[in-house]
Length: 331
Ligand SMILES: Nc1ncnc2c1ncn2[C@@H]1O[C@H](COP(=O)(O)OP(=O)(O)OP(=O)(O)O)[C@@H](O)[C@H]1O
Image (tube, rainbow, N blue to C red; front, side):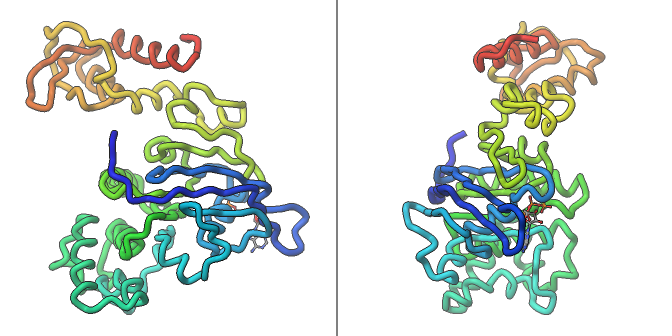
């Protein structure tokens, strides 16, 4: 998918953080190059150093050694306040100010930057619309008058207020129920397709990492990188038992969700049953086939015209072709 990019590159080189009086470093010699507009997921067990790694990028935590550059500029030499205005930050607890309205919450950074009232108000309207909340309805409410999912969207809007090139997201959807979480993830993907920020996103949830990430870094203790690759490559070719244990059960099913139906060789356009759109993925095709009692289902284009059919055989072939393209034996 091509997306416009307003993000910046991030380069971490040999970054180490040792907290005082700790026997070992929380993050040791961490190096990573992130391209403008990339959405990078940091995944790993509790205490492995994900949050420490991420918080060093906006210097909420100061590195003990190493260098961090954003668009080639050494951030350790920048004033901390300047830096944090360039980096949006979204956390699980949301952190909305309860005594401020939604509009006031979203305006915090524009106010710090000295924007006038009209510019700030226009930006608040634009941001609320961007996260699918009607400004006329929500701007003057207080956080407690919003659902958890709506509050989380305000957290994202607030982080985007000054249009920062970089966003850091620390388990932003972690506290929401599974249905809200999935909805927020879908919306967030749509939003990112438009805004193209460079995003570092911390999660415990490998499925969330697969769904959202352009690339995933699987981390072990001291933020050691076990594998850093696209979701499809990690699922098809985990680098170690450690990485496999993160993927868990059902790697093939998870891979299906990453392969578009358009990449499968379709069967003849003779099938009947619940049609699936060619823009959907193989996981969705499989769902339709199951609902159709295991028989092939028609595949339609965006205009509803039938362009072929898909059965378990075509799905299996597409999965095999994908695996062999990656140098994996068909299993
Ligand atoms: N302020 C601190 N002082 C001392 N040790 C700390 C401090 N903050 C974190 N640590 C330690 O550093 C290590 C990494 O912590 P960090 O919070 O980065 O891990 P994490 O992977 O984000 O964990 P979680 O998923 O549970 O949030 C842990 O062993 C933690 O106990």
